[in-house]
Image (tube, rainbow, N blue to C red):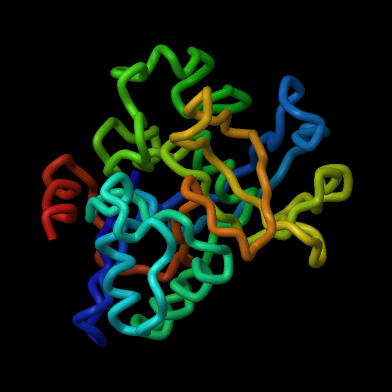
Length: 261
C-alpha cells in the first residue's frame, strides 16, 4: 500500500488526511449471500483513486468549523462523541460534501466522497468475494470485539488496517458515499466506474456501526438514509483523484505522528 500525508500550503487551518492509493482493478461487486440490494453480483472496473486511511475525525472537522463558522453537528459536546480522534458523527450528507468542497478550495485538490464502487473495492483490500476485509471469519473473531464500541465510536486507527492500509473500513460509523441509492441499481450498473442512479430520495452509505448488534458490516453490505439526516452513527471518509507527488511507504510511526497533531 502507499500512504501519504498531504500538506496544505494555503491554509494553516486545513489539515489534509493520510491518503492510501487504491490501485485500479476489476472486481466482483455485491454478494450472493447478502440482501437483495447486493445482487446481482457483477464485474466492475474502478479507476485508481486515493482514499483517506481513516474516517474524518473531530480534530479535522474542528478546523472546518473554525474556518466556516457553521454550527457543529449534534453530539458535538457529548463526552461519548467528542474525543479529538473519534470520527465526527451526526454529519448530514450535505455537510460531508461541504467539508470536501472546503478542503478542495483550500488545497486545490479534488476531494470528494467515494462512490459505492470505490468504497467496496477499497474495503475488500484485494480479496475477492470475501465477507470482510480480513476474509470470512466472523466479526466476533476480532481482537477485543466484546469490549469495543460500548457507548460510541472509538478513536480511529487503534487496530490493524486492512491490506490496503485503511483503518475501521467496515466498522465504527456508517460512511456516506457520493451515490444516490437505488436497491435495484446493480441490475443496470455500468461496467466501468459506476456512479449510482439519477437523484432519488436517499443517499448510499457503507460500513458498520458502533450501535448495531453486529458491529462490523460485510464489504458488500449497502445502507442508505435521506441526505439531510444526522445520525449518531454516521460519519464519512474522503476520497481524492490520483494527482499526488511525494508518496511514501507507510509504517506505524507515520500513523502515530499524524494522530499526534
